[in-house]
Length: 252
Image (cartoon, rainbow, N blue to C red; front, side):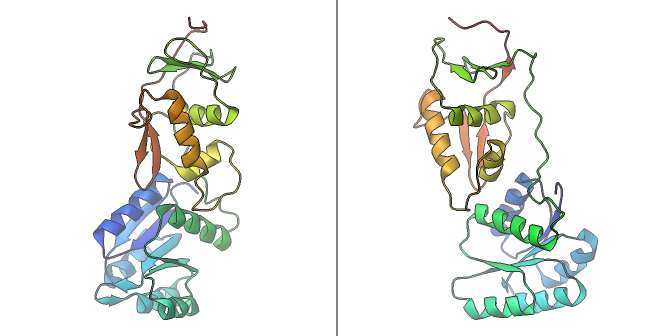
């Protein structure tokens, strides 16, 4: 659900920021707390649909905080724990935590777990929904140009800077279409998989990464130093070129 509020309880500002940016890039709203006291205050003010809670919360006890939250709320809790916190994880689940993630974690895993827990806790909520980015301008011709190249969306063809057909596969073109219709927008791997009609995938699946690498070889001036499709660390990718509509006239 767009703007679904997530309460991040984490005393490490770097991790807290990474979680916030990753969640917000997926359309979630966030509120943050670094202490148990601040977390309990935000619980009613933020009214979160889900809580992520670090077991090792500085001077506070994450397990006691989880117990306190569960005593007054049924909000789903995902606990973050270290590799050696097996007993704490078991206790956390017994207290009422809905899931746990072991550190170090991948941000894609966090997003996948958040969506999974939200779906389980409220089947009627579409946790995967993300606000649709505004598409690039079009004059109805179905042709968009960028960096000297032209994409014919109706014919699913891409012409290079010399007017030659780049020979993109249907999968390559679907991915390119998503990028050029949402320029200068950071898109997560999960969003890209959804928008290209991808099948079910695991958080460690590299399908999108492989597709991006293949597309870069066909559109970048120097695939080794890409400038059109930039990697956004911890999130996904962003198409950086200006995209403009073009009248239907075959190049060359």
